[in-house]
Image 1 (cartoon, rainbow, N blue to C red):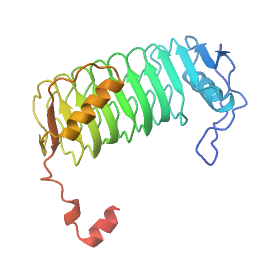
Image 2: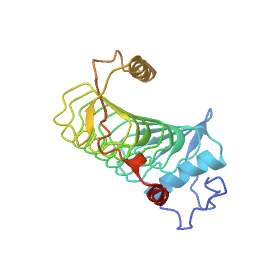
Image 3: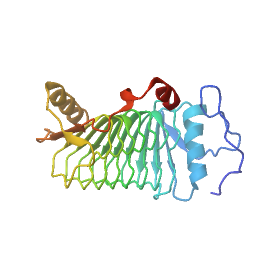
Length: 262
């Protein structure tokens, strides 16, 4: 099937995509679940069909077969729903989402779930660098390994990594939590301002102003709850890392400077 025309997508006052006249109609809907094969479709066609199903048809569950590692798939979904990708995604998969529960039965490339606002994304295999960049809310679970700078500029939400992680994870982290069960590369939590990072393996080196934190009952409850929700078994012994606040000087700014920053 060929790609649809180049008519621009428009949005209503709520930020939701308005109906698209040239959206494809290729999915089969049975018992409220829509399913289509993306093998011969372009990125634009796949995303248009997702929007049509979710916004026009009101479908709450979609299965996409054979995404074949295409880039920028499943982005900008702003509604509560379930989406399953039976295969791997490329770069920038599932970015700018707010509400959906997404399962990726494969790998994802760089910058998956960038600017995620809420919802859940579970990646059954590995993820590339910059996973969860600037994430603001929701849960992102990677059952394999992740690359460098996972959770860079993270502003909220939780990132769980069941395998190893690369360098500079949690760089400039502002809020939120990360749970990394494997080993971590150099520069963990470099220049972080807030948030918490839990590590089950070894840490090659800590970044600037990242220091060990004191474990509390709240940490035990939080980790156990996340493991229970995602069926990860019993939590291993974890190390906790937080901001040392040596570089944390925002409150010491003069009022005029603070006004400029805000």
